[in-house]
Length: 614
Image (cartoon, rainbow, N blue to C red; front, side, top):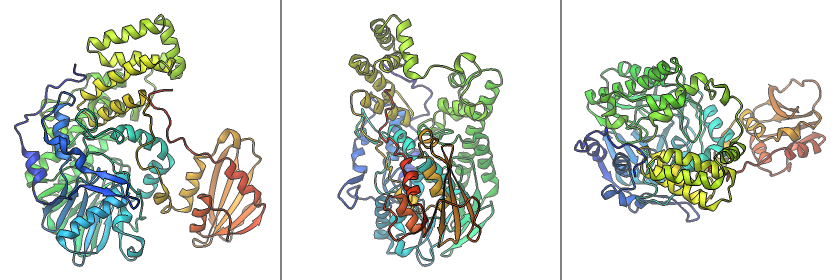
């Protein structure tokens, strides 16, 4: 029983992607296992050895093919002086050889995996020091391993280059909404699923996420405009700024003397996400398309190979132009046709059912929906323009899930008739509606073990039929939660390595989103001043009406009213204070009890909240 159509696939006889994925191979990491200092395994590439076999009935053949490509791992030469380590994390790490050392581009998610990737490179290319670090964009799989290649003792004088706005967007996604994003990412990437033909086989963008130490070295050089050129250790890099594409802060670049074009995550071998299922800002498919078109002209005929932060390179100038043009038209078509249909009155769900790609794009392997999907991307474009409300008054003020479910079960005649109906739909192959009915049963009574088990089987069927890797993982992880394996967020959620790189304002913002507003609203106005010695700035914290706000002021300015408490401290001491290490060594003036009252309203997020149950 298939949960998704399997027709319309490009010809499997075309082995170009496999040839390109293997081209330039130098050496693999053997065994492909990376451990943390305590011996915990944070990456196991060998777990995907089963992908060498034929596609089973429990996987979509297109996704199986994509997973076979993504599971290749090791050090690869892209062109002279440009190398990539692929298959040691969700993303690729690129290495640009300079006069004295090597410039690292996108150091993976975990410090442990980044260190292992750099060690593999050095084993075959010599003990070159890291002389530069480049972040192509603000997603954690492209900066989290920074300390694995650039430890604190080695960072002095090493430029760290990122697109303007990088730090702000890295924080908003990984700190402000970090716990919720991490929990959902565990579903999306299937990190807790077994690696097996009937379970997790990849994400479509890579295999999975590593689970080691996340870190961040703050940028020292901002790329503020297209055409900006930086020379790092003799490597001349020409940048194209592409904000609002795959990330709010992102950039492509050309290694001019190597004729090698980096497309960051703007042109990979899949239809990407306009709205990732783990949660993020909705991306702009129109702008994404325009920047791809601009890249074709901006970099002109100055490249012979294009590589990205995921997947494998494309060689040959005309082949690269074709890839960029088809990716350009992919996002333009998705955007424009969604707008055409919504202006004819169709809702997001209706557009998702109607929209189909033209044959030339549907028949291109790199345009298939292994990571993003045409269905949820069309809904994302709708959301960007019209929001969650589809215009139907019945949807304006619906009951929340549990209360809605209870009413559905009641009008269906009770549990038994609804369960029987769900099974009929499942047996008839309509797993989508069976899931809807069973989900109502579970939300109406989460202790209904029969409904939970039945829904788990339906989710497994939907997962096994999905061409999209993230849909598969979400369905299969949901099935596990239904049978009692809820677990934790399953991806790195310790943000200490990121928060240590934040400015004072961002640290205070991260505190504000954890305030229990209803309780804090009963608190009379509370004012605390922070005098940050190493910044020579005063930060005023104001808790009023349940909202924590802050203001940055010149050190000499003392606003009215006077603060009830003033702390004089360094930024590292502030980090320690926020981490719960107390006031030891910090100069205070005023009522120290105000700090205790403030912290009494700070909550800890639930990192194990339920997803498929109430």
